[in-house]
Image (tube, rainbow, N blue to C red; front, top):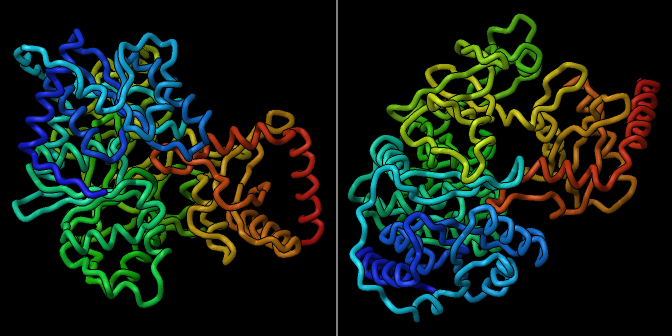
Length: 547
């Protein structure tokens, strides 16, 4: 279904709806939960909340992530956490929302038509103050249960200005395109609020439609002549993978000047593969714009330079793991395996970034540690979670991002999530290194492997690598496991338990990211870890005996 919504119409319809919401007797600051399907109704409700002084809370529109029971449970958890007063869902999601909201005391749960039938209150809108809450953004839950990030009006406005003026330098000729979900920061802030603030046209493709037919992204970029579009790396990978031989030439991507990439670890080879595949369509690899951000900072923290493509910093991977120092590979006296990281550029103006060790000491360039940021668009805290807020946000405004990285060549470089780090025999092992080895086997695709550690006997951690594989022949499967196990031992010097699983088994967050924490939880629930430790030890002995 195609719908067109001019900004003038959006403004008027939002103001009408705002008066209907206020007619219910809702007080300033009360939460309005919105199942964020990619429709004009979500936009109407979001901006109606702004006029009415209410706080919109975006809920995921993704039933297929775990089936009926899991989705209803997710919605119920978010409704309870946000203490929503009312909740809206499009017709296709209403039954799930009604079930989730049962016995929670919500004043009204309905679809858009339900709210549109309400009477309008004869009220004047209250002025919005800088310290008012603009929205609550729930994190994707890739490391723990989602937390409600509280973003004030002044914070998001500062971030929008930074993105528009410095990040992508939007101008009169720009047009945006997005398939990103409205219920996550890159989709909501980057491709809903940024176009509104810049008064720039934007076209949307439903996220589910993109997942089923990723080439629609290219087709609609061609038709709309869009100049700006963003995606996590997996979107570029999926799109390039689905292209048929010779098909790229039917698209015209010559207008695409900013191909933003962020939201998860960026691999250079993913971008190279996409650029090479779409070169016949006029795609310019200089359009790639690597960036770094998170919901706790409204959205954006840093951007690489515009119109320069992506740059990588290649370091001695073994030295980096052992000493937390990003030593350029050409300067290493005893170079080990090479590890290349995509540079995410400099922080936006007014943002401060520090790299700190576990003792809180600020580290110099090329020393890896936890990334801390401070700036005008940092959240005010997590909703109704004072302890988690205190653990993450210091009284003087420094946010512990939970990400690990370093600075070099004036750029911020992200190496992973602190909670994902695998420590085996005192060595720091990044899961991406293990996943890289698996994904470069002919039987495995990019994004089909997850690595993590689980507790084994004697308080020792066991390294686990779960790999999706379509191969059904038992001998070939055994050969793949043996090959990957040996590669891990050869490249990283550790032993690893490798398990093959069917396609579409690895769990994802509501934003589409692979979830190591959920995969780890699933693995622990389905395995006897004491027995697993014995099996791993036997495999080590067998391998050592065959050397």
